[in-house]
View 1 (spheres, chains in turn cyan, orange, yellow, blue):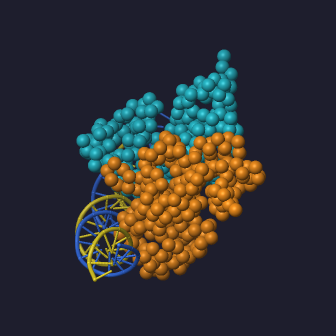
View 2: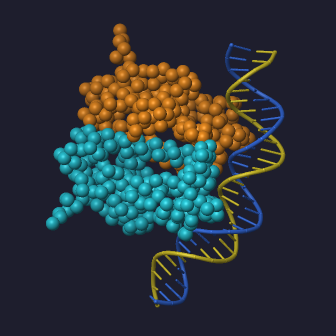
View 3: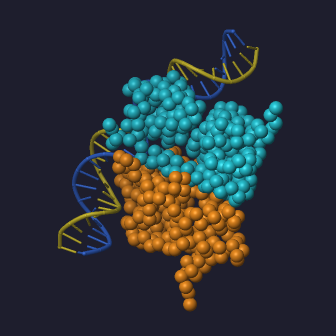
Length: 239
Length: 239
DNA sequence: CGCGGTGTTGAAAATTGTCAATAATTGTGG
DNA sequence: CCACAATTATTGACAATTTTCAACACCGCG
């Protein structure tokens, strides 16, 4: 018979390698379980938080798929990331104790709610957690550097190829196929993230399909030639 | 009579509001002083660290001006940021204990070297430091979101306007003029950061000058109409 | 004074965006 | 369950923006 506290325990969670530190002893693992206050369900299309809301917690995605996005005063919006199971949302809110973007569920989702004061308290005592928090934030910074590389220096084809490869790589780390993927976002959202218009995204998909690199059936993508995609991203290194 | 330990004390540093937590009591302030192992001078054009080097320390810029940049296998490079006095360099290295970019001095510079293990040890004891580290990293993440907005959705004019406004705003926070600035970087480096070619940067400067928004004399920029620049970045909000 | 790095400018080419029409798909309410 | 509306996706033609290539000017420094 399971009670609630067992149900939300990180120590039993199949995602723990993704969102929690590794190599904890049993006592530490038990304390880590206290981090998650509760779970929260978010329906597709609704938001986990919005720009301007008070920041209190980080969120670990348990199931589902999110986007984070900014909306400027003049109505443009920019998708800043897509998050899948095991990834952490909300780091932007720490600096001013206020969220600076919207986090929207692209399919029905569930997150673990981790009050940040608990994370801070506990990471003062559990060195592995402290290290983990630092690494999480640093990883975010590094991965945004890659996005800058993508947005700053690449053409539409290269961007989309890099995007697809990044998605399958993350899906593969979660036990999914490295050839098949279902896009949870629209062409417009992909375009926003990649700095191109939805029509260009669509055309580039079609072009990849024409060239036999992928098969596209709406949001289902079948990767036929991942080597060719990799060569697109990194033209020089063509074996 | 000053000894070395006084000389490198953060508590006496005029930049401490920029790079250190505020509201410390005296005992805490004394401990913070231990963070800085020493100072290091970097000549213009040489690097503070390079991609692949072991990460051991964060660096606070004391004087001078840096860029951070990535170089891809196929030789493209992307400037990921410019750092001035009081700003922190090296957060990218935390995740894999290895730097993932190059940090190059654009003018003769001096940095405070803060071994990261000391930061971690001390932030376990001094809550204000822990908070400060978290806020620094979160701030970096948020400001990169703005860069994504810039690279993803803006045209050349808007990008350059936003870039200039960001620079003067940071300079102003350091007590410099909000109309005059000297660019420490080449047009090519600006272009890399903003995702455009150096020729486009040059043309856009000339266009701003033609329209009376700025005066350009090589790397000296005089901002004549900051309101117009702001309107360029945020077209809708035109008062 | 000349040299190398840096910056400017022009003209043509390439890429991407815009606008518009149409198709496919999904969700909703009868 | 079907039909309709709304959303999402594809494609074409044309326009706008940016890049590329090239020539030349400028500056600082030995």
